[in-house]
View 1 (cartoon, rainbow, N blue to C red):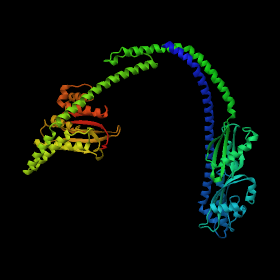
View 2: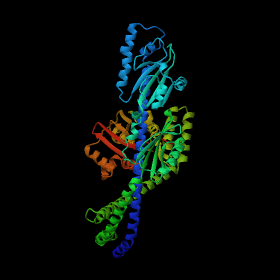
View 3: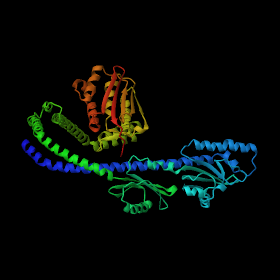
View 4: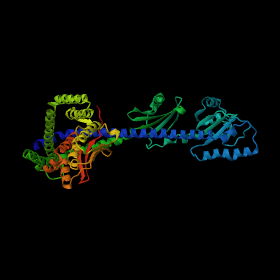
Length: 590
Protein backbone atom coordinates (compact mmCIF):
# COMPACT_ATOMS: atom_id res chain seq x y z
CA UNK A 1 0.00 0.00 0.00
CA UNK A 2 2.89 2.35 0.77
CA UNK A 3 4.45 1.91 -2.68
CA UNK A 4 1.13 2.44 -4.46
CA UNK A 5 0.55 5.61 -2.48
CA UNK A 6 4.02 6.93 -3.35
CA UNK A 7 3.55 6.21 -7.06
CA UNK A 8 0.10 7.81 -7.09
CA UNK A 9 1.46 10.80 -5.19
CA UNK A 10 4.27 11.31 -7.72
CA UNK A 11 1.91 10.92 -10.70
CA UNK A 12 -0.67 13.41 -9.47
CA UNK A 13 1.72 15.91 -7.89
CA UNK A 14 2.58 17.77 -11.09
CA UNK A 15 -1.02 18.65 -11.97
CA UNK A 16 -1.91 19.96 -8.52
CA UNK A 17 1.25 22.08 -8.44
CA UNK A 18 0.37 23.61 -11.80
CA UNK A 19 -3.17 24.34 -10.70
CA UNK A 20 -1.97 25.53 -7.30
CA UNK A 21 0.54 27.92 -8.86
CA UNK A 22 -2.10 29.36 -11.17
CA UNK A 23 -4.57 29.59 -8.32
CA UNK A 24 -2.03 31.28 -6.04
CA UNK A 25 -1.23 33.83 -8.73
CA UNK A 26 -4.91 34.65 -9.25
CA UNK A 27 -5.52 34.69 -5.53
CA UNK A 28 -2.52 36.94 -4.95
CA UNK A 29 -3.72 39.32 -7.65
CA UNK A 30 -7.25 39.29 -6.26
CA UNK A 31 -5.98 39.88 -2.72
CA UNK A 32 -3.96 42.87 -3.92
CA UNK A 33 -6.97 44.29 -5.69
CA UNK A 34 -9.16 43.67 -2.65
CA UNK A 35 -6.51 45.21 -0.39
CA UNK A 36 -6.34 48.34 -2.54
CA UNK A 37 -10.13 48.50 -2.71
CA UNK A 38 -10.30 48.16 1.08
CA UNK A 39 -7.73 50.94 1.47
CA UNK A 40 -9.76 53.08 -0.92
CA UNK A 41 -12.88 52.36 1.14
CA UNK A 42 -11.05 53.44 4.29
CA UNK A 43 -9.74 56.58 2.60
CA UNK A 44 -13.23 57.48 1.32
CA UNK A 45 -14.59 56.99 4.85
CA UNK A 46 -11.73 59.11 6.24
CA UNK A 47 -12.44 61.93 3.77
CA UNK A 48 -16.18 61.82 4.46
CA UNK A 49 -15.65 61.81 8.25
CA UNK A 50 -13.13 64.66 8.00
CA UNK A 51 -15.48 66.85 5.93
CA UNK A 52 -18.46 66.05 8.16
CA UNK A 53 -16.37 66.87 11.25
CA UNK A 54 -15.42 70.25 9.80
CA UNK A 55 -19.03 70.98 8.89
CA UNK A 56 -20.10 70.00 12.40
CA UNK A 57 -17.45 72.34 13.85
CA UNK A 58 -18.69 75.25 11.74
CA UNK A 59 -22.33 74.62 12.68
CA UNK A 60 -21.37 74.28 16.33
CA UNK A 61 -19.59 77.64 16.32
CA UNK A 62 -22.52 79.32 14.58
CA UNK A 63 -24.90 77.78 17.10
CA UNK A 64 -22.76 78.96 20.02
CA UNK A 65 -22.90 82.51 18.64
CA UNK A 66 -26.69 82.24 18.36
CA UNK A 67 -26.78 81.51 22.10
CA UNK A 68 -24.74 84.62 23.00
CA UNK A 69 -27.72 86.71 24.10
CA UNK A 70 -25.54 89.55 25.37
CA UNK A 71 -24.03 90.09 21.92
CA UNK A 72 -27.23 89.51 19.96
CA UNK A 73 -29.37 91.72 22.18
CA UNK A 74 -27.02 94.62 21.55
CA UNK A 75 -26.48 94.00 17.83
CA UNK A 76 -30.22 93.66 17.24
CA UNK A 77 -31.38 96.50 19.49
CA UNK A 78 -33.15 99.55 17.97
CA UNK A 79 -31.48 102.30 19.90
CA UNK A 80 -28.60 104.76 19.90
CA UNK A 81 -25.59 103.24 21.68
CA UNK A 82 -23.79 105.14 24.41
CA UNK A 83 -20.02 105.28 24.51
CA UNK A 84 -19.82 102.66 27.25
CA UNK A 85 -21.89 100.20 25.23
CA UNK A 86 -19.83 100.83 22.09
CA UNK A 87 -16.68 100.17 24.09
CA UNK A 88 -18.24 97.02 25.61
CA UNK A 89 -19.16 95.64 22.18
CA UNK A 90 -15.70 96.36 20.80
CA UNK A 91 -13.67 95.27 23.82
CA UNK A 92 -15.74 92.21 24.80
CA UNK A 93 -18.09 90.81 22.20
CA UNK A 94 -16.16 91.60 19.02
CA UNK A 95 -12.92 90.39 20.57
CA UNK A 96 -14.68 87.24 21.77
CA UNK A 97 -15.49 86.48 18.15
CA UNK A 98 -11.85 87.06 17.25
CA UNK A 99 -10.77 84.74 20.07
CA UNK A 100 -13.23 82.13 18.79
CA UNK A 101 -11.70 82.48 15.32
CA UNK A 102 -8.10 82.32 16.55
CA UNK A 103 -8.79 79.30 18.76
CA UNK A 104 -9.91 77.32 15.68
CA UNK A 105 -6.98 77.59 13.24
CA UNK A 106 -8.90 75.74 10.52
CA UNK A 107 -11.32 78.68 10.17
CA UNK A 108 -10.61 81.92 8.36
CA UNK A 109 -13.86 83.83 9.07
CA UNK A 110 -16.25 84.09 12.04
CA UNK A 111 -18.43 87.19 11.63
CA UNK A 112 -21.86 88.68 12.03
CA UNK A 113 -23.81 90.73 9.47
CA UNK A 114 -26.75 92.87 10.61
CA UNK A 115 -29.04 95.54 9.17
CA UNK A 116 -29.12 97.71 12.30
CA UNK A 117 -28.38 101.30 11.16
CA UNK A 118 -27.45 102.25 14.73
CA UNK A 119 -24.78 99.56 14.96
CA UNK A 120 -21.15 100.38 14.25
CA UNK A 121 -18.92 97.92 12.38
CA UNK A 122 -16.22 96.17 14.35
CA UNK A 123 -13.79 94.81 11.82
CA UNK A 124 -13.48 91.93 11.07
CA UNK A 125 -16.16 90.40 13.31
CA UNK A 126 -19.30 92.56 13.20
CA UNK A 127 -20.29 94.08 9.85
CA UNK A 128 -23.19 95.70 8.11
CA UNK A 129 -25.52 93.52 6.05
CA UNK A 130 -25.05 96.02 3.20
CA UNK A 131 -21.68 94.44 2.48
CA UNK A 132 -23.47 91.34 1.15
CA UNK A 133 -24.28 92.27 -2.43
CA UNK A 134 -25.45 88.86 -3.62
CA UNK A 135 -29.25 88.97 -3.60
CA UNK A 136 -29.56 85.22 -4.28
CA UNK A 137 -27.53 84.50 -1.17
CA UNK A 138 -29.73 86.78 0.95
CA UNK A 139 -32.90 85.22 -0.45
CA UNK A 140 -31.67 81.69 0.31
CA UNK A 141 -30.68 82.67 3.85
CA UNK A 142 -34.07 84.25 4.60
CA UNK A 143 -35.86 81.24 3.10
CA UNK A 144 -33.88 78.37 4.62
CA UNK A 145 -32.35 80.00 7.74
CA UNK A 146 -29.22 77.81 7.30
CA UNK A 147 -27.31 77.39 4.03
CA UNK A 148 -23.89 76.23 2.82
CA UNK A 149 -21.97 77.89 0.02
CA UNK A 150 -18.78 77.02 -1.85
CA UNK A 151 -17.39 80.42 -2.82
CA UNK A 152 -14.89 80.77 -5.67
CA UNK A 153 -12.48 83.67 -6.10
CA UNK A 154 -14.64 85.56 -8.56
CA UNK A 155 -17.74 84.99 -6.43
CA UNK A 156 -16.06 86.68 -3.49
CA UNK A 157 -15.83 89.90 -5.45
CA UNK A 158 -19.46 89.56 -6.53
CA UNK A 159 -20.75 88.55 -3.10
CA UNK A 160 -19.12 90.98 -0.69
CA UNK A 161 -18.17 94.62 -0.76
CA UNK A 162 -14.74 95.23 0.80
CA UNK A 163 -15.01 92.23 3.12
CA UNK A 164 -11.91 90.21 2.32
CA UNK A 165 -9.54 89.31 -0.43
CA UNK A 166 -10.71 87.03 -3.18
CA UNK A 167 -10.36 83.81 -1.21
CA UNK A 168 -11.89 80.47 -2.16
CA UNK A 169 -13.89 79.25 0.80
CA UNK A 170 -16.66 77.04 2.14
CA UNK A 171 -19.03 79.08 4.33
CA UNK A 172 -21.98 78.28 6.59
CA UNK A 173 -24.62 80.99 7.00
CA UNK A 174 -27.19 80.95 9.82
CA UNK A 175 -30.06 83.41 9.99
CA UNK A 176 -31.02 84.31 13.57
CA UNK A 177 -34.70 85.14 13.23
CA UNK A 178 -36.25 88.30 14.68
CA UNK A 179 -37.86 86.94 17.82
CA UNK A 180 -37.07 89.62 20.39
CA UNK A 181 -34.61 91.58 18.22
CA UNK A 182 -35.51 94.58 16.13
CA UNK A 183 -33.11 93.84 13.27
CA UNK A 184 -31.92 90.89 11.21
CA UNK A 185 -28.69 89.06 12.19
CA UNK A 186 -26.73 86.65 9.97
CA UNK A 187 -23.82 84.56 11.25
CA UNK A 188 -21.12 83.36 8.83
CA UNK A 189 -18.50 80.74 9.68
CA UNK A 190 -16.03 80.23 6.85
CA UNK A 191 -13.14 77.88 6.10
CA UNK A 192 -10.65 78.13 3.27
CA UNK A 193 -11.49 75.62 0.55
CA UNK A 194 -7.98 74.18 0.52
CA UNK A 195 -8.30 73.43 4.26
CA UNK A 196 -11.89 72.17 3.98
CA UNK A 197 -10.85 69.66 1.28
CA UNK A 198 -7.29 69.02 2.51
CA UNK A 199 -8.07 65.32 3.22
CA UNK A 200 -8.45 64.78 -0.55
CA UNK A 201 -4.70 65.19 -0.91
CA UNK A 202 -3.78 63.09 2.13
CA UNK A 203 -3.65 59.76 0.29
CA UNK A 204 -1.63 56.71 1.32
CA UNK A 205 -1.38 55.95 -2.40
CA UNK A 206 1.23 57.41 -4.71
CA UNK A 207 0.72 59.34 -7.94
CA UNK A 208 -1.86 56.82 -9.13
CA UNK A 209 -4.43 58.33 -6.78
CA UNK A 210 -6.72 61.12 -8.04
CA UNK A 211 -9.97 62.93 -7.20
CA UNK A 212 -12.83 64.89 -8.79
CA UNK A 213 -15.27 67.32 -7.13
CA UNK A 214 -18.60 67.67 -8.97
CA UNK A 215 -21.28 70.29 -8.22
CA UNK A 216 -24.41 70.99 -10.22
CA UNK A 217 -23.31 68.32 -12.76
CA UNK A 218 -20.13 70.28 -13.41
CA UNK A 219 -16.54 69.44 -12.45
CA UNK A 220 -15.71 71.97 -9.75
CA UNK A 221 -12.20 70.77 -8.95
CA UNK A 222 -9.88 67.90 -9.82
CA UNK A 223 -6.39 66.66 -9.03
CA UNK A 224 -3.47 66.28 -11.37
CA UNK A 225 -4.54 62.99 -12.93
CA UNK A 226 -1.17 62.01 -14.35
CA UNK A 227 -1.37 59.35 -17.02
CA UNK A 228 -3.86 56.96 -15.43
CA UNK A 229 -6.17 57.23 -18.50
CA UNK A 230 -5.55 58.07 -22.11
CA UNK A 231 -6.28 61.63 -23.11
CA UNK A 232 -8.71 60.69 -25.90
CA UNK A 233 -10.86 58.80 -23.34
CA UNK A 234 -10.74 61.51 -20.65
CA UNK A 235 -13.94 63.22 -21.79
CA UNK A 236 -15.80 59.90 -21.80
CA UNK A 237 -14.53 59.20 -18.28
CA UNK A 238 -15.60 62.62 -16.98
CA UNK A 239 -19.08 62.15 -18.50
CA UNK A 240 -19.27 58.79 -16.71
CA UNK A 241 -18.50 60.51 -13.40
CA UNK A 242 -21.21 63.14 -13.92
CA UNK A 243 -23.79 60.46 -14.78
CA UNK A 244 -22.94 58.59 -11.57
CA UNK A 245 -23.72 61.63 -9.44
CA UNK A 246 -27.36 60.55 -8.96
CA UNK A 247 -26.46 57.09 -7.58
CA UNK A 248 -25.74 56.04 -4.00
CA UNK A 249 -22.26 56.16 -2.51
CA UNK A 250 -19.82 53.29 -2.59
CA UNK A 251 -16.94 51.94 -4.69
CA UNK A 252 -17.33 51.49 -8.45
CA UNK A 253 -15.17 49.74 -11.03
CA UNK A 254 -14.79 51.99 -14.05
CA UNK A 255 -12.58 49.35 -15.64
CA UNK A 256 -10.30 46.50 -14.59
CA UNK A 257 -7.58 49.05 -13.93
CA UNK A 258 -9.53 51.89 -12.25
CA UNK A 259 -11.70 51.87 -9.13
CA UNK A 260 -13.67 54.90 -7.97
CA UNK A 261 -14.98 55.76 -4.48
CA UNK A 262 -17.93 58.13 -4.17
CA UNK A 263 -18.69 60.61 -1.35
CA UNK A 264 -21.99 62.53 -1.26
CA UNK A 265 -22.26 65.84 0.61
CA UNK A 266 -25.94 66.82 0.24
CA UNK A 267 -25.59 70.01 2.30
CA UNK A 268 -23.21 71.38 -0.33
CA UNK A 269 -25.01 69.64 -3.23
CA UNK A 270 -21.63 68.15 -4.04
CA UNK A 271 -20.22 64.77 -5.10
CA UNK A 272 -16.56 63.82 -4.50
CA UNK A 273 -14.93 60.95 -6.40
CA UNK A 274 -11.71 59.44 -5.11
CA UNK A 275 -10.04 57.13 -7.62
CA UNK A 276 -7.16 54.70 -7.81
CA UNK A 277 -5.39 53.22 -10.80
CA UNK A 278 -4.42 49.54 -10.54
CA UNK A 279 -2.20 49.60 -13.58
CA UNK A 280 0.89 50.17 -11.47
CA UNK A 281 0.65 46.78 -9.75
CA UNK A 282 0.59 44.75 -13.00
CA UNK A 283 4.38 44.67 -13.34
CA UNK A 284 4.82 43.62 -9.74
CA UNK A 285 2.20 40.88 -10.15
CA UNK A 286 3.97 39.50 -13.22
CA UNK A 287 7.21 39.17 -11.29
CA UNK A 288 5.40 37.54 -8.41
CA UNK A 289 3.72 35.13 -10.82
CA UNK A 290 7.07 33.97 -12.20
CA UNK A 291 8.42 33.57 -8.69
CA UNK A 292 5.46 31.44 -7.64
CA UNK A 293 5.84 29.12 -10.64
CA UNK A 294 9.55 28.68 -9.94
CA UNK A 295 8.83 27.99 -6.30
CA UNK A 296 6.26 25.38 -7.33
CA UNK A 297 8.77 23.50 -9.42
CA UNK A 298 11.32 23.51 -6.62
CA UNK A 299 8.64 22.25 -4.24
CA UNK A 300 7.80 19.41 -6.63
CA UNK A 301 11.34 18.01 -6.81
CA UNK A 302 11.93 18.52 -3.09
CA UNK A 303 8.69 16.88 -2.01
CA UNK A 304 9.20 13.96 -4.40
CA UNK A 305 12.60 13.27 -2.85
CA UNK A 306 11.30 13.14 0.75
CA UNK A 307 7.90 11.55 0.07
CA UNK A 308 9.11 7.97 0.28
CA UNK A 309 10.83 8.42 3.64
CA UNK A 310 7.95 10.29 5.25
CA UNK A 311 5.32 7.88 3.93
CA UNK A 312 7.24 4.80 5.01
CA UNK A 313 7.75 6.05 8.56
CA UNK A 314 4.16 7.27 8.81
CA UNK A 315 2.57 4.00 7.72
CA UNK A 316 4.90 1.91 9.83
CA UNK A 317 3.63 3.59 13.00
CA UNK A 318 0.07 3.52 11.72
CA UNK A 319 0.29 -0.26 11.18
CA UNK A 320 1.27 -0.60 14.85
CA UNK A 321 -1.91 1.21 15.87
CA UNK A 322 -4.04 -1.03 13.65
CA UNK A 323 -2.36 -4.15 15.09
CA UNK A 324 -3.03 -2.95 18.66
CA UNK A 325 -6.72 -2.37 17.87
CA UNK A 326 -7.15 -5.80 16.28
CA UNK A 327 -5.44 -7.68 19.14
CA UNK A 328 -6.73 -5.76 22.19
CA UNK A 329 -8.64 -7.40 25.06
CA UNK A 330 -12.17 -6.02 24.67
CA UNK A 331 -12.93 -6.60 28.35
CA UNK A 332 -9.94 -4.47 29.39
CA UNK A 333 -9.74 -1.44 27.03
CA UNK A 334 -7.56 0.42 29.54
CA UNK A 335 -4.70 -1.97 28.61
CA UNK A 336 -4.70 -0.79 24.98
CA UNK A 337 -1.08 -0.11 23.98
CA UNK A 338 -0.43 3.56 23.13
CA UNK A 339 2.26 4.36 20.56
CA UNK A 340 4.86 6.56 22.21
CA UNK A 341 5.85 9.88 20.70
CA UNK A 342 4.49 13.39 20.10
CA UNK A 343 3.31 13.16 16.49
CA UNK A 344 -0.19 12.68 15.06
CA UNK A 345 0.00 8.86 15.14
CA UNK A 346 0.83 8.90 18.85
CA UNK A 347 -1.99 11.35 19.46
CA UNK A 348 -4.34 9.14 17.40
CA UNK A 349 -3.48 6.01 19.40
CA UNK A 350 -4.02 7.91 22.67
CA UNK A 351 -7.43 9.14 21.50
CA UNK A 352 -8.36 5.62 20.40
CA UNK A 353 -7.60 4.33 23.90
CA UNK A 354 -9.62 7.15 25.49
CA UNK A 355 -12.50 6.42 23.12
CA UNK A 356 -12.44 2.68 23.90
CA UNK A 357 -12.41 3.35 27.64
CA UNK A 358 -15.26 5.84 27.29
CA UNK A 359 -17.31 3.43 25.17
CA UNK A 360 -16.81 0.71 27.78
CA UNK A 361 -17.91 3.11 30.54
CA UNK A 362 -20.94 4.21 28.52
CA UNK A 363 -21.93 0.59 27.98
CA UNK A 364 -21.76 -0.06 31.71
CA UNK A 365 -23.79 3.07 32.45
CA UNK A 366 -26.36 2.11 29.82
CA UNK A 367 -26.80 -1.32 31.40
CA UNK A 368 -27.19 0.27 34.83
CA UNK A 369 -29.73 2.79 33.53
CA UNK A 370 -31.70 0.00 31.84
CA UNK A 371 -31.78 -1.88 35.14
CA UNK A 372 -33.04 1.23 36.97
CA UNK A 373 -35.73 1.77 34.36
CA UNK A 374 -36.79 -1.88 34.52
CA UNK A 375 -37.01 -1.77 38.31
CA UNK A 376 -39.09 1.41 38.14
CA UNK A 377 -41.44 -0.12 35.59
CA UNK A 378 -41.88 -3.25 37.72
CA UNK A 379 -42.56 -1.15 40.82
CA UNK A 380 -45.06 1.00 38.94
CA UNK A 381 -46.78 -2.14 37.63
CA UNK A 382 -47.03 -3.58 41.12
CA UNK A 383 -48.56 -0.39 42.54
CA UNK A 384 -51.09 -0.08 39.71
CA UNK A 385 -52.53 -3.61 40.07
CA UNK A 386 -55.01 -2.86 42.84
CA UNK A 387 -54.97 0.97 42.78
CA UNK A 388 -58.64 1.37 41.80
CA UNK A 389 -59.74 -1.11 44.46
CA UNK A 390 -57.77 0.78 47.12
CA UNK A 391 -59.15 4.18 46.04
CA UNK A 392 -62.75 2.92 46.07
CA UNK A 393 -62.28 1.28 49.47
CA UNK A 394 -60.85 4.50 50.95
CA UNK A 395 -63.76 6.50 49.51
CA UNK A 396 -66.13 4.08 51.26
CA UNK A 397 -64.31 4.54 54.58
CA UNK A 398 -64.41 8.32 54.13
CA UNK A 399 -68.17 8.30 53.50
CA UNK A 400 -68.76 6.11 56.57
CA UNK A 401 -66.71 8.51 58.72
CA UNK A 402 -68.68 11.52 57.45
CA UNK A 403 -71.99 9.74 58.10
CA UNK A 404 -70.83 9.23 61.69
CA UNK A 405 -69.76 12.92 61.69
CA UNK A 406 -66.20 11.87 62.43
CA UNK A 407 -64.68 14.58 60.25
CA UNK A 408 -61.19 14.27 61.66
CA UNK A 409 -61.08 10.63 60.55
CA UNK A 410 -62.53 11.69 57.17
CA UNK A 411 -59.72 14.22 56.70
CA UNK A 412 -57.11 11.60 57.59
CA UNK A 413 -58.56 9.18 55.05
CA UNK A 414 -58.57 11.99 52.45
CA UNK A 415 -54.90 12.78 53.13
CA UNK A 416 -54.02 9.11 52.98
CA UNK A 417 -55.86 8.71 49.66
CA UNK A 418 -54.07 11.75 48.24
CA UNK A 419 -50.73 10.24 49.27
CA UNK A 420 -51.56 6.97 47.53
CA UNK A 421 -52.69 8.72 44.36
CA UNK A 422 -49.57 10.88 44.31
CA UNK A 423 -47.24 7.90 44.78
CA UNK A 424 -49.03 5.67 42.25
CA UNK A 425 -49.74 8.13 39.43
CA UNK A 426 -46.70 8.86 37.21
CA UNK A 427 -46.53 10.96 34.09
CA UNK A 428 -44.23 10.38 31.14
CA UNK A 429 -41.71 12.97 32.35
CA UNK A 430 -41.67 11.47 35.86
CA UNK A 431 -41.21 14.97 37.24
CA UNK A 432 -43.32 17.32 39.35
CA UNK A 433 -43.00 20.89 40.54
CA UNK A 434 -41.39 21.58 43.88
CA UNK A 435 -44.72 22.93 45.17
CA UNK A 436 -46.47 19.62 44.36
CA UNK A 437 -43.80 17.62 46.17
CA UNK A 438 -44.03 19.91 49.22
CA UNK A 439 -47.83 19.50 49.43
CA UNK A 440 -47.27 15.75 49.46
CA UNK A 441 -44.69 16.11 52.28
CA UNK A 442 -47.11 18.21 54.35
CA UNK A 443 -49.80 15.52 54.14
CA UNK A 444 -47.25 12.83 54.98
CA UNK A 445 -46.14 14.70 58.14
CA UNK A 446 -49.78 15.29 59.10
CA UNK A 447 -50.37 11.52 59.08
CA UNK A 448 -47.21 10.91 61.13
CA UNK A 449 -48.36 13.39 63.77
CA UNK A 450 -51.60 11.42 64.17
CA UNK A 451 -49.72 8.19 64.84
CA UNK A 452 -47.47 9.43 67.65
CA UNK A 453 -47.82 11.33 70.90
CA UNK A 454 -45.05 13.79 70.07
CA UNK A 455 -45.30 16.30 67.23
CA UNK A 456 -43.09 16.77 64.20
CA UNK A 457 -42.98 20.46 63.25
CA UNK A 458 -42.48 20.88 59.48
CA UNK A 459 -41.06 24.26 58.44
CA UNK A 460 -40.77 25.17 54.73
CA UNK A 461 -38.66 28.15 53.59
CA UNK A 462 -38.91 28.37 49.80
CA UNK A 463 -39.13 31.52 47.70
CA UNK A 464 -42.24 31.70 45.54
CA UNK A 465 -40.25 31.86 42.27
CA UNK A 466 -38.66 28.46 43.01
CA UNK A 467 -41.94 26.63 43.61
CA UNK A 468 -42.37 25.94 39.88
CA UNK A 469 -38.93 24.33 39.48
CA UNK A 470 -39.20 20.75 38.24
CA UNK A 471 -37.72 17.89 40.28
CA UNK A 472 -37.97 14.10 39.95
CA UNK A 473 -41.14 12.85 41.59
CA UNK A 474 -40.81 11.27 45.06
CA UNK A 475 -37.30 12.66 45.50
CA UNK A 476 -37.90 14.48 48.81
CA UNK A 477 -40.38 12.18 50.62
CA UNK A 478 -37.95 9.24 51.10
CA UNK A 479 -35.42 11.65 52.62
CA UNK A 480 -38.08 13.05 55.01
CA UNK A 481 -39.06 9.49 55.88
CA UNK A 482 -35.40 8.64 56.65
CA UNK A 483 -35.18 11.77 58.80
CA UNK A 484 -38.09 10.45 60.87
CA UNK A 485 -37.07 6.78 61.05
CA UNK A 486 -33.32 7.21 61.68
CA UNK A 487 -33.24 10.59 63.36
CA UNK A 488 -36.46 11.57 65.13
CA UNK A 489 -38.20 8.32 66.04
CA UNK A 490 -35.32 7.29 68.34
CA UNK A 491 -35.76 10.53 70.37
CA UNK A 492 -39.53 10.10 70.92
CA UNK A 493 -40.02 13.82 71.50
CA UNK A 494 -41.14 16.93 69.66
CA UNK A 495 -38.79 17.58 66.75
CA UNK A 496 -38.33 19.81 63.71
CA UNK A 497 -37.87 19.11 60.03
CA UNK A 498 -36.84 22.16 57.99
CA UNK A 499 -37.01 22.27 54.18
CA UNK A 500 -35.12 25.12 52.45
CA UNK A 501 -34.52 25.88 48.76
CA UNK A 502 -31.94 28.38 47.56
CA UNK A 503 -30.67 29.26 44.10
CA UNK A 504 -27.07 28.52 43.15
CA UNK A 505 -26.31 31.40 40.77
CA UNK A 506 -22.92 29.99 39.85
CA UNK A 507 -24.31 27.01 37.93
CA UNK A 508 -28.00 27.92 37.39
CA UNK A 509 -29.18 25.25 39.85
CA UNK A 510 -31.09 25.07 43.13
CA UNK A 511 -30.14 23.32 46.34
CA UNK A 512 -32.98 21.82 48.40
CA UNK A 513 -31.99 21.03 51.99
CA UNK A 514 -33.93 18.75 54.41
CA UNK A 515 -32.68 19.25 57.98
CA UNK A 516 -33.83 17.39 61.11
CA UNK A 517 -32.74 17.83 64.72
CA UNK A 518 -32.65 14.08 65.39
CA UNK A 519 -29.81 11.93 66.68
CA UNK A 520 -27.53 12.58 63.67
CA UNK A 521 -24.81 10.22 62.37
CA UNK A 522 -21.25 9.43 63.36
CA UNK A 523 -18.44 10.43 60.99
CA UNK A 524 -17.75 6.96 59.56
CA UNK A 525 -21.40 6.39 58.68
CA UNK A 526 -21.63 9.86 57.07
CA UNK A 527 -18.48 9.25 55.04
CA UNK A 528 -19.69 5.82 53.81
CA UNK A 529 -23.08 7.17 52.75
CA UNK A 530 -21.61 10.11 50.81
CA UNK A 531 -19.12 7.81 49.06
CA UNK A 532 -21.97 5.49 48.09
CA UNK A 533 -24.02 8.44 46.79
CA UNK A 534 -21.04 9.52 44.65
CA UNK A 535 -20.71 5.95 43.34
CA UNK A 536 -17.17 5.51 44.66
CA UNK A 537 -17.91 2.37 46.65
CA UNK A 538 -20.84 0.94 48.58
CA UNK A 539 -20.71 -0.20 52.19
CA UNK A 540 -23.86 -2.35 52.29
CA UNK A 541 -24.03 -2.35 56.08
CA UNK A 542 -23.98 1.45 56.29
CA UNK A 543 -26.24 2.10 53.31
CA UNK A 544 -28.76 -0.50 54.43
CA UNK A 545 -29.00 1.18 57.81
CA UNK A 546 -29.65 4.56 56.16
CA UNK A 547 -31.81 3.24 53.36
CA UNK A 548 -30.78 2.05 49.91
CA UNK A 549 -33.68 4.12 48.54
CA UNK A 550 -31.70 7.35 49.01
CA UNK A 551 -28.99 6.09 46.66
CA UNK A 552 -31.63 5.12 44.11
CA UNK A 553 -33.03 8.67 44.27
CA UNK A 554 -29.56 10.18 43.82
CA UNK A 555 -28.89 7.85 40.88
CA UNK A 556 -32.25 8.84 39.37
CA UNK A 557 -31.34 12.55 39.65
CA UNK A 558 -27.99 11.88 37.96
CA UNK A 559 -29.80 9.94 35.25
CA UNK A 560 -32.19 12.87 34.70
CA UNK A 561 -29.70 15.75 34.79
CA UNK A 562 -26.11 14.47 34.77
CA UNK A 563 -23.35 13.58 37.22
CA UNK A 564 -23.02 17.17 38.49
CA UNK A 565 -26.31 16.76 40.35
CA UNK A 566 -27.55 14.42 43.09
CA UNK A 567 -27.71 14.12 46.89
CA UNK A 568 -25.10 14.70 49.61
CA UNK A 569 -25.37 14.54 53.40
CA UNK A 570 -24.05 16.60 56.29
CA UNK A 571 -24.47 15.56 59.94
CA UNK A 572 -23.22 16.06 63.50
CA UNK A 573 -24.00 13.23 65.90
CA UNK A 574 -26.70 14.06 68.49
CA UNK A 575 -27.36 17.45 66.80
CA UNK A 576 -28.68 17.33 63.25
CA UNK A 577 -28.70 15.63 59.85
CA UNK A 578 -28.98 17.61 56.61
CA UNK A 579 -29.64 16.16 53.14
CA UNK A 580 -28.80 18.43 50.18
CA UNK A 581 -30.50 17.80 46.83
CA UNK A 582 -28.93 19.64 43.88
CA UNK A 583 -31.00 19.88 40.65
CA UNK A 584 -30.89 22.28 37.69
CA UNK A 585 -33.25 25.24 37.69
CA UNK A 586 -35.77 23.97 35.13
CA UNK A 587 -39.22 25.57 35.12
CA UNK A 588 -42.48 23.74 34.63
CA UNK A 589 -43.50 24.05 30.95
CA UNK A 590 -46.69 22.12 31.21
